[in-house]
Image (tube, rainbow, N blue to C red; front, side, top):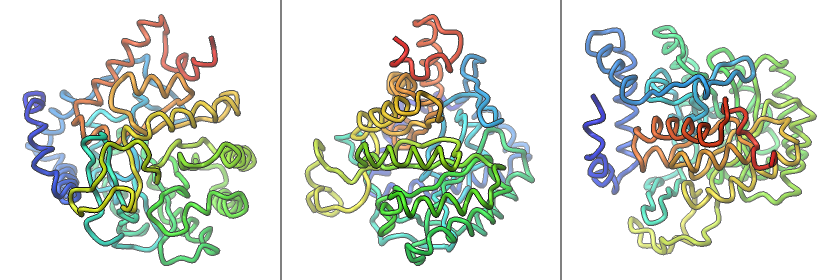
Length: 378
């Protein structure tokens, strides 16, 4: 049903260019309403058509990781659905996993608007949203209500972030507080210490503070839920080595590489149209194509350092099956995207999954797991 709309998608994208945050908010409201009405006649009809239009499954793409089944390796990144409003719908849009958040212990409005911008010349986005969300307690209630309507279709993760009002030296208890509320409504959890939009947050990637956060979380978790850490693309190799060491010490389930970048080198966009200011002066993180190469380099480094023993979720500049394959062969077992989904539209998910199957055929591989880290296998 929805394939007829694909030629018109660029018009939809253009119509929302001046206020992408509002357009995104309206999308989430629509998907939330659909989920609430999914058992009505019209709701069943739309959900069925979403499945028909956007889901593509092939047994060669299915993986069992952490005791969870991922029908495809292509997932939705954090930042898209901060409050879990559409958690019950993402699987029907073809995603093999979806990550909610970032969620903070305390509700927070985020940074002043405007705070989300598209950079079409760079196939990128600039965001300084500031982890705007309804807080862990409310997100937990939203997800609990969602799973009462329908068991989750795909594994759901939650990205945990420090509340802005919480001092850095109290960060660990902030993460633990969120985890306590949310631990029973999601399948895996991510420690976000790499967003550039919460003051001081990136300093938590340093060994001593991250050590405390991971210790406190794993003390509560007791190995019940997979716990990962999401890192910045701007870290140097020594800093990444330290995080790898901590990941092994605390038996983390994996590393997500990477978050957005604060670097501005190589951008075609010189002035942000909405503000009239040079892009170099604009705060926020850049996502999309500008970080594709760097995130792949980080994935490759982690895989090489760990000899493939630590699971990697790759994110950054994934628009096509070629982009996805690049990250998988560098060492990523799972993938996430958000900016690419916005620019390409929801059809990019089945296109990527179909493209991955074609890659398996091309290289005469029987399963996607055989392609993970293939760059190192000769």
